Length: 118
Image (spheres, helix red, strand yellow):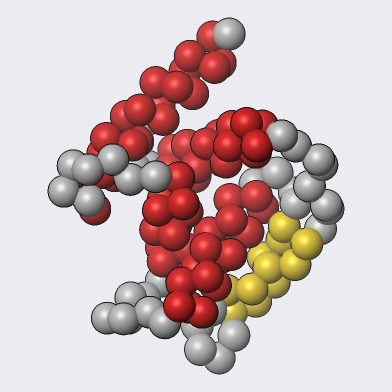
């Protein structure tokens, strides 16, 4: 229970901070945060990402987040600067609520690691 409350508190702090910084205070959704993590992990910003690039950024974000739990492992950066991951372990069958909770935990841990939140 205490852990869930701490996660909820950190999630709300993170959500407000990211929404204020990147979305003019309008609440950003979970997919938007994963997209931002993908851009962060890519390490460079293009003025306009193509639709395929946006999907790849989401994949990079998810892979990076789930690498914390051993589901993915960083492999290499290609000649265009894109990080690549390999699947190390298949995700268990999770309900949508469990998936959302796992991603929130991974996102909070990511931003704690980066020193963006405490």
